Length: 193
Image (tube, rainbow, N blue to C red; front, side, top):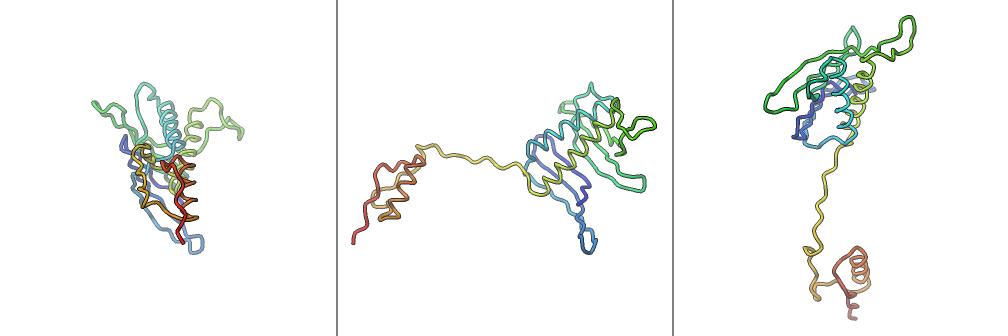
């Protein structure tokens, strides 16, 4: 799978992701776009925020309160790259920056294959790689689960005596209800023969 584009709308929890599936046998490519309200898991949100921090640092935009709105992954004859579009967090005076382009080739120390520890690009590339991995997990189904709404105990209906189950199975159901905090106080009556 090759991810092409990922968008996370501000505050709306709307995710749009475009990617290409590659059939291992036929090598056929199938382009897919997924748009959903299923929010990303916290790990993807954290990676997304870290990417924004690293991008602001790399492009000298630290003074601006910007978030990444779109990332596009590219691959061509020159190698792999990424384009980021950023937008301001301030809704009164919106500011859009981008697309900001970066080649996904790390900065190395001169005459070595060691990463340059003073490079601002290398942490940005690490953040891009992490976001790409988390997007792959998102496509694979790792998404924020909706919160379950618990009914207060007072809203749980109590069965009338004639509606209560009878017999062995009824007793087991009544025991289970009592064990999980059900309101049934007495065991179901045994079945009449």
